[in-house]
Image (tube, rainbow, N blue to C red; front, side, top):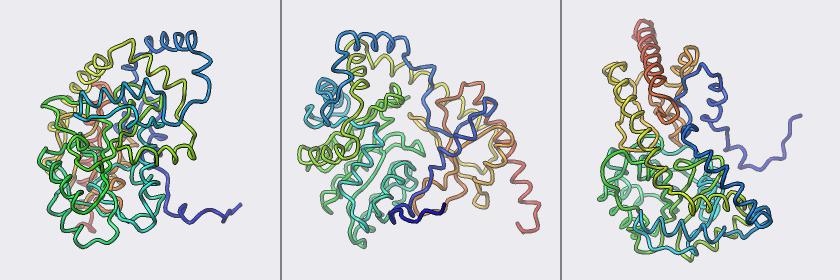
Length: 405
């Protein structure tokens, strides 16, 4: 049946390329560098078993009941205190809204601030999930050139001076998805000044900030905010367990009530039992110790992948060396297409995400993203060797083709 009664916004939406690739990589023989998945071997399963029993025995009726849209207050208290300690903010529970993962925070922000035709500025490239979420509200995307220090603020100023209906700036300053890059303090400070000058809202997405392998933490954008215009999105998916779907939005008291109204209309509230279990875990165990374990494993895998890339990649391939997070970013020769390369790689049981999907306005098909968190060091070595072999064969075929002359 050809159904034609969908809203116009549906014409702008398409399936996540990452999710579609993950369907192809479910076979155990595939070495997948595609999804941004944490390693399930690091999930605190035994501790959560005990916590689940504890919550149900002590507060089972409350844990299985509806609750407030804002979220379980003891959990919001803990999140605010942790942010104040690690990110230099000064929040209370009233500045925190519990969301169903930080992905819902992105969607609520788009719904709260974007009218059709408004302009959102983002890093180039940017997180695919945010592009998808914002696109439902009909904005125009303006990509801002981004280098190893962050968004090019001079370029952003030029774009702002010539752009009508500028509304939002969306950024991931720490270990960005997809590139793994982090912003310098100077770029963060300059962005705040520019947002103040042009009256823009900043969405600071921070799923990876605590997964730092080396170097000192850099102050968050929200800690530098002087006018309450930064929304900070946090999540427990990368530092704890994504299956709980626990995230949060931290924002000024003028913004949180608007987001609460939108969340009421979306899903009433985040899972009561998940919130209670997470709060009990934080009360009983040290999340910091859990993060230390995760960081140590991911650092070794990052190192293994960097060594393998140096050994296996052709000399003209450029890649980023991240100081934290889950990803690195490759730039191939301009004439190569990572989507074509992926098709060939899947035939050799290795997968990645082509980089073109991370550019809301298209192009840059010679790029790709690699994840190192969810494969063992042995499989990383094997997978990068396969990738290098297929890439060399693909390059040789193109060079031998009459069409390449």
